[in-house]
Amino acid sequence: MQILLGYSKWENFEKVIQRAKDACKNAGEQIENHFPDVRKMVEIGSDTEREINDIALTRYACYLIAQNGDSRKEQIAFAQNYFAVQTRGDPNNEINKKPNETSLLLAK
Image 1 (spheres, rainbow, N blue to C red):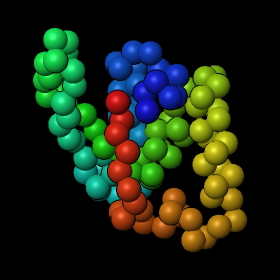
Image 2: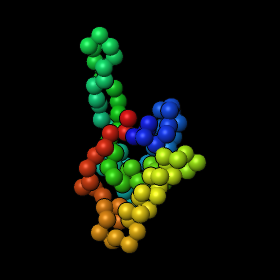
Image 3: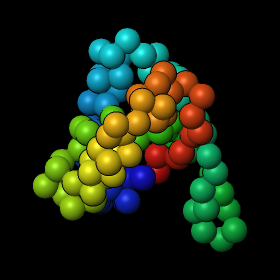
């Protein structure tokens, strides 16, 4: 998701994730339900892999990340518009509900 939203450096994207986590907590949600820490294997060359830390994201977490991202980035503006259109007038939309049962997406 980091690259999709136009962040070339993990450090900058991590700041957005932290602001999204803060918003999640301030909304009364459990951060662990929407931003669970996971481990994944990545290739490091010569058919070798190593395990790295990662974050899984619910749809709600993706929404919060989009809302807390740099809207000067075209990708963030697109994501913000996407979520605005998806949630407008639809009380049954996942974002308008408690989104604990949403599917997980990988952050990076």
